[in-house]
Image (cartoon, rainbow, N blue to C red; front, side):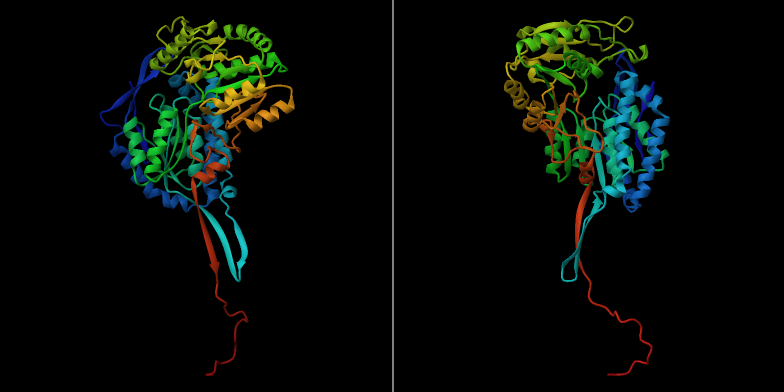
Length: 498
């Protein structure tokens, strides 16, 4: 059986006695064992990072950018290999896995502009003979703790800007799908990154706490559930670290009476069920405004949801989504589905008991569509992280807007309408970090920033875009005045005593 260790100082190293099982979600079988780091393993990685970071920081930003340029070439070269490894451990389809890699690659491309993004500011003659200027300087050793659902994209969202800024970076990926992060570290070094600048330490809470408590780690990035995001943010801040921690979501899509119902239904199916709903930007709540709108939307949605094809990634590109990541995830999703039924929600489409022939032991959950969900139901208040879409009927636009605004999460939201005034009002008033207008999953492109509001985000700087260069650097301001010197040029006569 495959043994997965850590990537430290430019090589894969074996772990100790503690290991976790890595499953094939489609079959339910254990396909690998991944090492779980001790605090000592983390200490070793930090010592290596401390030793190599100063030289990397002193490297010209343009030369650092050239490493990222080469890395992009290698990502494209190995796209199929990366996607297959990702699908095998996560369960998402191959096209979706390639999208995972590509969205990370786009952030790397943005970070190639580091020489421009790291330019400081300059004021000439701030005072008599005084100039003032600022410099952006790296933090030192930085770290990231990333989730299972995007094992390529989110690590690149973190380590690409960190490294472009001149930092060393230690990645603690999810132990559920660790292969792709290890492959990315190897590719970065093939691209010319010095050994030790990017390292991967696999592990569980022991490794997380070691990162949070280590005095030489200057910043921590995290993506995961809200309770853990809050824990990491509080502990990192208590230890004097800069932190950006992204938590859970419950994303609403408002459907106005004038919306194109076919367009809205297609958008909801893709945004609600893609990647088996295991996305923090998935639409999990549809909010049609008015009973007639709701009836028309459900009429359009039901046959589309029933027609979704669920299967392993190896079944071909026509599979719409695959299994969820673990048996525990499946059990929790099924529990929440049952709670919805018990609370009186109408299961218009119920794929919860589906089984994939030949993969009966896989972690598959079929698509579920609920109608007449109310905001007191657990399927509405909790993040399900599965292929479940809830329809909450609103009588008015203001009621629909209030649903999105009153929820504790504020990651993403969308409105589908032909009315520019309604769209403008919604975008301006809603207290959610990312808003789509006739776009169901409003994930910004790499040159804008990604981040939610309320309990979806802890910290004050978002991921990628300009904020990433702010997060991974400190600003130093210099005020300079030079004494007057000799300006008359050289003297050619013999100096005489005065």
